[in-house]
Length: 295
Image (cartoon, rainbow, N blue to C red; front, side):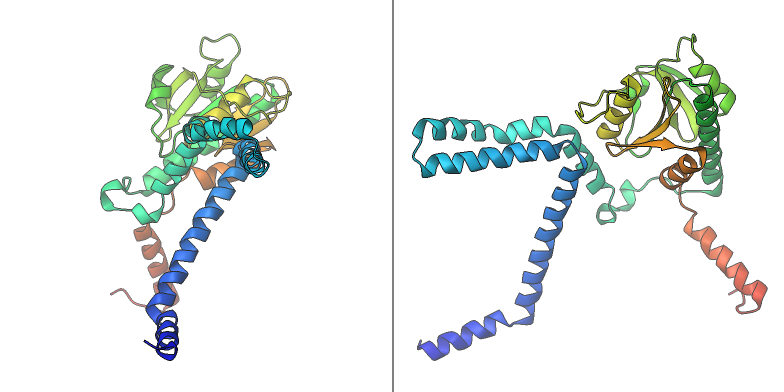
């Protein structure tokens, strides 16, 4: 094969549509994975630990460049166990990341889909959100501490077992009684499942986040810990200041009023309107305006 034929074959291979599409897809996938990893690191305590990992890699490279054999051997030994250490340290973040992957539409196989949403379910959750917001406002005014965990897709049976099962309707009076100082269950958390109070007096895992302010106590640390280890949404009312906060995905949103809390919970907790109902609604509107007829 002469040089002319070689270059001709190379150019043809490079500019084949299939090759370009595959290479572009390859680059996009890698870019997406890197972006998601960076976003995960920035949102969690992994940001500080990532700096330490980079510093360790840089130190190892410098040690090899300057032929510091003892230092290089020590750093290599540390990095050999680094993979296991990263899994242990980043366990909550990795778990949440895998849960988010499992919740994407890529894996939306019929077998894994939740039960179909109905208008009754939406109304039940909406009433529960209203009750939680009313309760948070009342407890904030009286500076009564509260911790309410709202279960989403991650099953919280292990948390429920640590408390007292109730299986009751949710309303401000019941929640106010549970969190009233002096009652046996006021120090624990209430778990809400399917728009009802599933259990009270539950113990939650505490967060190890070092960035939590000194003005936040055990309730806030427990709320963050719960949101780090699951996709649950946690409402907190401070006993010292009466400030209302919401924890989700390892992030604490503070100084909420009733309206802001309602908007956040409505977007995170209340199921979307069933597709069938949307179609019926739009179809009815067309008929009323005389633009379409029932098929």
